[in-house]
Image (tube, rainbow, N blue to C red; front, side, top):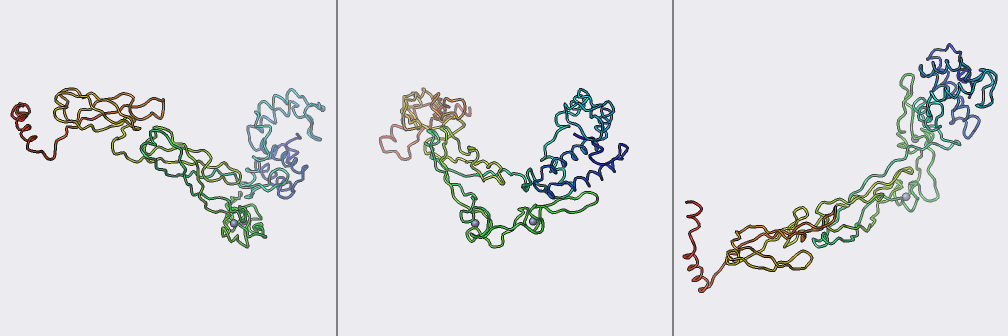
Amino acid sequence: MTDFYQTLGVPKTASQDEIKKAFRKKARECHPDRNQGDAACEERFKEVNQAYETLSDPEKRKQYDEYSRLGAFGPGAGGFRPGAGGQGFDPRIFQQWQQQQGQGGASFEFGDMGDILSSLFGAATTGRGGRRRRPAAERGADLQADVTVSFDESLEGATVRVPVDKPDTCDTCHGTGAAPGTTPKICPDCEGRGVVAQNQGPFALSQPCPRCRGAGTIVETPCPTCKGSGVRRRTRRYSVKVPAGVKDGTRIRIKGKGEAGQRGGPAGDLYVVVHVESDDLFDRRGDDLVIDVPVTLSEAALGARVRIPTPGGGHVSLKVPAGSRDGRTLRLRGKGAPKLKGGGRGDLLARVRIAVPDKVNKEQKELLERLGEALPDPRAAAFG
Ligand SMILES: [Zn+2]
Ligand SMILES: [Zn+2]
């Protein structure tokens, strides 16, 4: 660390404006874009940034001046190395100053300054070692796929193959978009930066380069397979475990199986929406299943034990109590659908349906007539 004023080449009395001007001039001189891979230059660039970071903030500058007076930084000229104990330098006071600056204040990452400088100069800067700084990594988009399972599969669970149409790297050009034997060229408009400066007052704003659409490169001879996009849509088949008890509309998230990320970003997720076919016998209601149980009038009136199907192909004996009205629902605990969360099963709800014959023969007709005469008038009870 050297004297910050000296680093920027300004007097201690410099105004904020003078400091800003000096910083921009110095930063341009040792900007990594102009000195690709020059380590000494990169070091100087960091120093200039650090000096500016402190002196451009009036509060930090005040603290710096204060500690400077107490001897935290040693005599201005010639710089100082922590621990070297140069004349007038007090390491304890320097440490105090460092603490006051906080961890992030006295040290910074080179990449952060790159971002600040892009906004200052309207250009993407290069990273460590002069490598061109790429636009930020981007997470891939999430994808959705639909799958239909049978009612039984929804109760028992199933492994299904889900076709997913998604963009993939073109095999022919390996994603460059350039025809085999050719390579994409650096975009002349933005010189590969992917952004162009748009001067507006003292600061330059950067915007994506219209010619290369931010890619930094242009393809002169497009790949015949993907027509220069570098991308091919392709159907991938994923094996997806559908858990027992899945309901119609349940979404299953499969991490990382969405679209690929851009520039090293993570892939998106795949959401599989499960549709469940309806069943002839059972209706799903939450974790419960509902089944209609036809009974005769005499079974409903006198009570009966009837055999009814259960999901999955089994049967169970249901006790219909005497005097059951049409629509009465009887609950069979634990015979419903498996619960997705917490384990166990819902209930089977057996709904009593009194069956009325469509057609009757002579004997049945006589019997029903006699029964009708023997039974009390139901409307007398209902309407009074
Ligand atoms: Zn291609
Ligand atoms: Zn461009």
